[in-house]
Image (cartoon, rainbow, N blue to C red; front, side, top):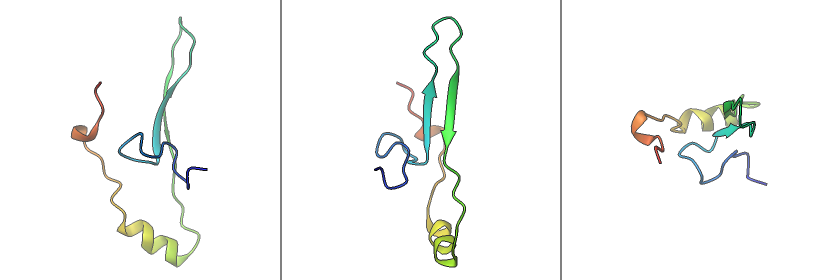
Length: 62
C-alpha cells in the first residue's frame, strides 16, 4: 500500500516510524525501522545511490 514505506511522507525517512504502547501507567516508545537487504545487483546499486542519512536537525521536535 505504501510502496515499501512505513510512514510515507510523515517522516523525513520513509523507512522509520515512532510508535508507542497506549498503556497509561507503563508507556513504551518504539522506533521501528525497515532494513533493506538487496535481492539483486540492481537493488544493491539503487540502495547505494539513496540518501537515507538523517541528523539531529532533521528530527521533529513538536
